Image (tube, rainbow, N blue to C red; front, top):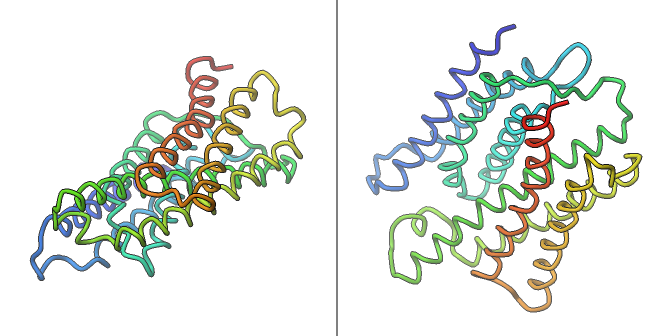
Length: 268
C-alpha cells in the first residue's frame, strides 16, 4: 500500500487545524470557529497520520524505527496526548506550533525513508523499554511546549497585554499546575524507561548506547531536581521554565541526537 495517498490528507488536516487555532487566537469575533473545529481537524490528521505510520513502519520482519519514522511517531504521540488533555482543559492552542511540525514529520518520513527494524521476535522487555521511552519523551516534549506557552503568557501578563494566550489559556497558576503534572508523569515514565533499559539491555554503556544513556540520566537528574525544587521550595515561573527546557534539550540530544549520528551520519 502506498502511504502517499494518506500523507496529503494528514498534512492538509494538520495545517487546517493550525489555521483554525491561529484564527481563534487572534480574532475575538464570537462567530469564530468553535474550539471543537480545531480539535476535530487535528483528530482527522491523527487518523491519517496513524495510517501513514502503519504503512511505513510495519514491515514483514519487524517495526521500522528509523530516524524520521521515530520522529513522526513521537510527533503523533505528542499530539494525541495534547488532544486527550484538551478534553477537559482548553490547551488545544498548544497545537499551533505542534500541528505544522507534525505535518513536516509526515512529509519527511515519506520523502526520506529509512530502515531500522525492531524485529517481531524481539524480547518483550526491549519492546516495553522502547514503548515507555517513546511515551516518556512525548510527555516531556509536550511539557516543554507547555512551558514555552507559560513563558509567553507570563510575559504578556507582566506587560499587561490582555489578549493573546491570556485570553485562551487557563489562568497562570492553573497552567503551572498542569506543567508540573506533565513533568511528574514524564519523570515517572523516564524512570521506568531507564530501569527497563538497565534490566533488559545487555549493556547500557556499550559504545553505541553510552552517550544516549549518560544524557538520559542527566535529563532524569534535571527533571528530578526540578520536581524536588517545586516540592520543597515552591519553584515556579522562569525557574521552572528554564529547568524544563534545559532537561528537554538534554533528552532530545540523548534520543534523536544519537539516532541522527548513528543512522544518518555514520550509518552501518
